[in-house]
Length: 428
Image 1 (cartoon, helix red, strand yellow):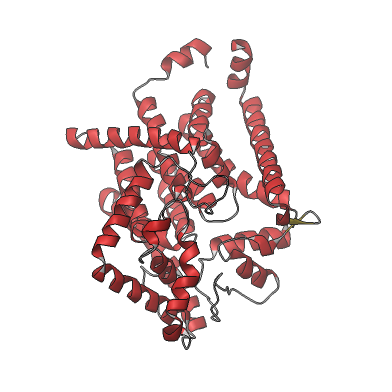
Image 2 (cartoon, rainbow, N blue to C red):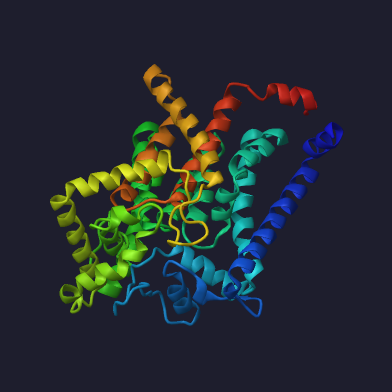
């Protein structure tokens, strides 16, 4: 067994080939699992665009049918949302569907091979030796739940996880053209998910002041300019840097109401959408603009928080519990088989996350925190901030948990904890 592992580790071509084969096989098995559970995802081997969740079905169908970039909410509102979702994922799926393949398996595999290749390329540039690349890949993908979320083509966490891994690795490294790669990745992250703008801004500011790097900030400004011009052309409304999309208001309202505490976190606040909309129908039925609709529900949320601070604080505590301690399955349908059941993968996530959290806090108190400590602190605070006002579930935490896993690997790597394993295998 040792000799087989030595051959695998020491031969670069064999290592890379087998790594890709294993990853592709994992993708195929995951696709088969999805199809077994949700056969409606495929129609005659083609991916069923209508089954894409989180409003992506409408927008992707609009793009591939030539109607342009527009979506509808999965709620009973007769409003066109041009800024409902940021453009990276819809155009990525549409481009793959139109110009490469409409096959369900191929779309999934292409998406994941692209991002996995980026991570593997970075790992080879940074760590050189295959034993370390293998170990960090195990740290990243060991958890079936995290891997499953990463492999999805929607929602956004299936992209954010890969992108944050890549951003962290580039930030940790000293590779050539590092500033350009950081800027490109930050730009892609920026146009992937609206709420992550808080992290992108904070990290770009950090790079500007700590490393005197201007390009990341400039790249984000250019992305915002193009997106805001598109939105203005479609809606005649100017957006702000902290309100890139127009669907946040109703989400916030569903997580800031009297019934939120009774459903969260075991159920999703999505079950409260229709009730919230019905309660406010008289005030919103004449609204025809997406940003007026969004502003109404944001104002509704702020008024609720002001008048019900105790409910908000109780909800805030529940969200902290979801991040640090909850080990039950969340966002389930009441009465389903998984409702109120233990989630083993969450236990694994929580243990490693708490360990990395403890190490970072220890480094802060000792005054010995490094740049990777700074990255994790920035990501932890700025990424979680919008979720703490709304709601957060296990899938939202996958990028955070994966980041903590990589942090632990680098922490042990920098302290030479893996040298004995390298010596045992006689790694070249």
